Image (tube, one colour):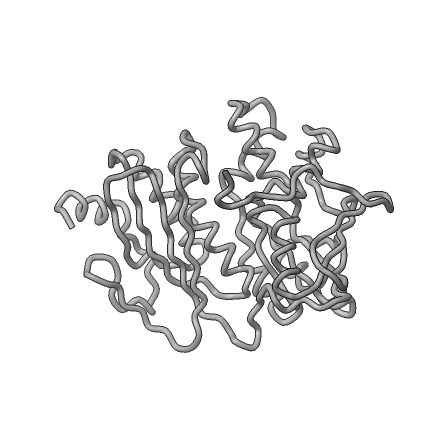
Length: 319
């Protein structure tokens, strides 16, 4: 580690967010944490121009780099606790680093996560966050626990982030409150950590919606060896999305847009009241949008008829 790198890390990434379970944090060859029992581990890499726009504000990049990992642990009912950061940056300008660190560390503090180590190097802008946290084996949510007959739910509303990205990419920013709300949902999505923990004894399967509702529900179906039917008319849309976009475009964003980081989960019909109570305790709505069925894949219905969506979600490594 060069002296410049060490000074930048010390100045911007050493913080007071470390918990008492961090025995050795930033500044040595490795971090040491005190953990007992199973850990959930998630890693995401964000590449400029692929996973976020080139001109995205640095505080939003920092926030988002941790948020996507928090969302993964939330979908499994885990408790996020420690993270590491590997940051490649073309030119380590200090105002950029200060804003980036503020976005990341602000969200870390909100969720009780300690940044315990990582790496800073020169290169194309790439951010990798590694997040760990304890998880209870008997309350662990996975993609493979769904059962035929389960209701399919989503938290919050869908499509806002994809719509916000469209507006941001077109340079449409502060025209009005609806525009600002959608762009904010893209720049700084809300990871559903408390929601996942509240559902961990009620849901049979869960996933966070990163690639789009239909794609991610498809992952549940594949892992659970079943199919799903989605009633498009029951997929929740925010007033902001419904106001700014025609119905067809709004539903397309909600079904296949991705980057919502809401939870999609399944639960037995007998758990419907318990799910409603659990969500009310964390202040988040959950809407039943369909069911798991025998077969494979996800099919959509609208107004009682088969509906073919224009976009089924993000495809990794597509040409």
